[in-house]
Image 1 (cartoon, helix red, strand yellow):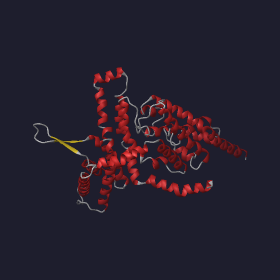
Image 2 (image 1 turned 120 degrees about the vertical axis):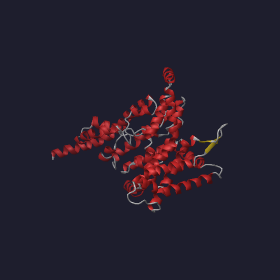
Image 3 (image 1 turned 90 degrees about the vertical axis):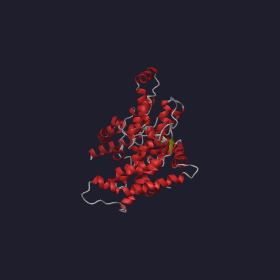
Image 4 (image 1 turned 135 degrees about the vertical axis):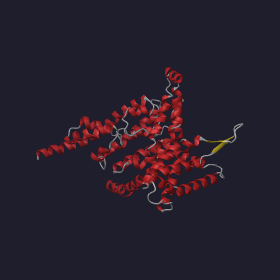
Length: 433
């Protein structure tokens, strides 16, 4: 297949499919909902890390002052309840994405109730008590319940939107306050949705799994986590993202939505392992992916640095002043669309191979014990290099990020000089004419 035929095939067959995936409302609901939990998860993880710093004087101080109890409690109501927050984030954003923003608040309440309907309860009758106390097994509210939470949030939202679209609701007369009117509109959807999920709970009680959560966790969540936790999967993920960017499709939006929930499921166990002084069990996480996107997709931080310091042409000297500040905060859309990287065969070579080389070197460094595995915190994408390494759990990761920056600059340099020399020649020829 010739180069032109390959480009035509990619543009006509592959890119439209990828674009549809990236614009899929269900996947957008999952990814947007997952990312909206960033603050809660980061706080819980940071508190966990602060409580696990292995310096004896520090541990004595936080134990004596009672601060350690605070550090230990915060994760229990943040990362350890991740499934609850996932239901909130996904159901709220899904309502907006499915064009019913006015239903968002009530939809969140109904989705949480639907999720809790599926959680097993346990009654304990204490001696002398008039009635038994009912307890919820909180393990079902944490990482183990993430995928059930995703499913419940999407299904509940779709049923709610469907009933409202069909106008199977109680309409209040004009003049009734909006809050009261919305509450009555939600009555029939809430009644219907809770009946559906109550029936699901009863049906699963007759199976060997006993609960919907155990069914989802055993047959969906665990296999997906095993599949995502592998080097070949990560390599394919990076390649797909870069190829899509080359054709003008936002590679991250098209490839990452399915991975966000899986990566979030790793955070609690990874932070718990670090707090216990053990190695991170899931190394293929958001933190590892972040190492391949310093400066943005394609690890373009080296490109903007080379452009800023080494450009000879007026074009790239002026352009570098725009993209350099953006690149330091991992924003590389100006480079991708302005340079451009899109359909640029010269710059596509380092754009593809640099993140792959970084991935392989990071993997080998972790396996050899040179650097620790990142925890996998879903930190803001605009977090500058070096700071992001510290937030992922170690100063060694910050040092590795400095190495990645130098490596990226070295790889991009000869390819950028080709473009810079071409631009310089065009400028000289233009002046002569």
